[in-house]
Image 1 (cartoon, one colour):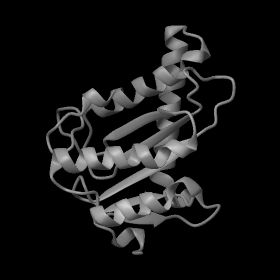
Image 2 (cartoon, one colour):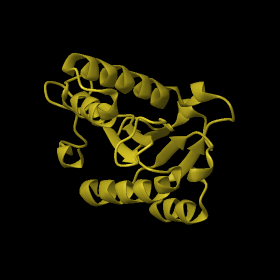
Image 3 (spheres, rainbow, N blue to C red):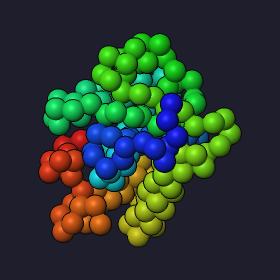
Image 4 (cartoon, rainbow, N blue to C red):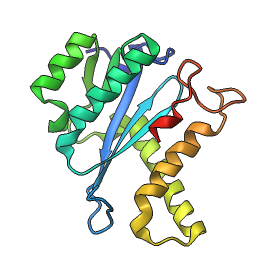
Length: 177
């Protein structure tokens, strides 16, 4: 494992950061109690997935990494997360190895080591609450507001995207939302 300041980070498939938030008790729709966010460091593109249980994480990540590989003809090189058990499933680790993706874990009880993913969760959470407040919708719709916040994040131009929404190698993945 390399130190995070030595990792390649400039190309869209270099580094992806992920985190799972939740559970959100009594505020879920369709039994989705968690949100999985996958953040591309280079482009700042965000994938956002509502999930019912943390056990779904390896399957969703595998499907998303295969999608990235098929669309961009390149595999994610590094996948950084905390050391939660859902990231350590043997079949998932084998799949990552076969794809050429190295898994990086932060130290125990150190969320600041995955600070970029944590900051993204705060940003999207703040946006989600503002969307709900402005719309007057009840809190039960938090999941839709969170996904809307991720979509808006991907569409707003920034220093990485220039004058268009955030893309991965020129491809907008709006169909994921």
